[in-house]
Amino acid sequence: MSGRFIVFEGLDGSGKTTIGEAVALATNAICIASPPSEYNVLRKFICDEGDHLTRFFYFLSANYMLSGRIQKLLKHNNVICCRYIYSTIADLRYYWQPQHVGDDLRRQLERISLSLVLEPDLVIYLTCEHQERMKRIQHKIQNKTIEADNINPQYGEVVHEAYLEMAKKNWVTIDTSHRDIKNCIDVVIETLAPFSETAV
Image (cartoon, rainbow, N blue to C red; front, side, top):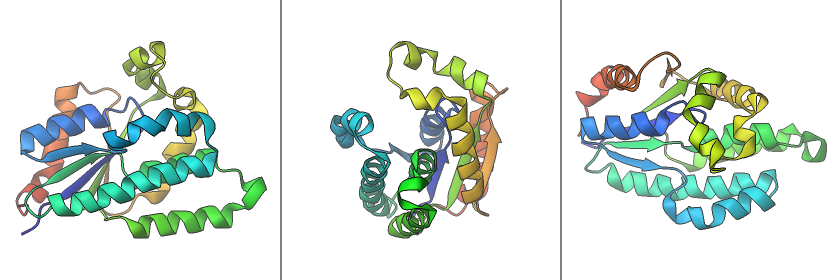
């Protein structure tokens, strides 16, 4: 029997990487992140110099590559991925310039991108209030290791609405705003219990 593919999505500071890695350790799953480390050498250049389509195709290619890697891992493992194609689509919503090419193309790109990658068994969408997120990522802000737009409240609103629009039956939303990390991990593990019973 193949493993289960679980995705953690959410804005920076929502806890997806910290919680995803902890849950993977607790459940003996493999944890990977998107984009993969091999892509880091280009990331700053793409994000600083590229337009909205350059960003989109950079992240799409990363997710497409990861999708193939995940399919192989699932033969013998459960896989947790921190960020996936949904982040790419949500990011595109914010940067899209409809006055140049129109929204029809954006919708087509979103449909095509979703069809190119493996669909997860479950998406855990972690939400968090803006001020709490800013506290959590303060060190990234001070060290300038986070994109400026990611701390913009408007970016958070647009991306959040995009996530909600994409949410389907296999999505679970967990608000981490007023929970400590242990409680968040416990809630996620409880959510995953039905999947663990039928996993590898």
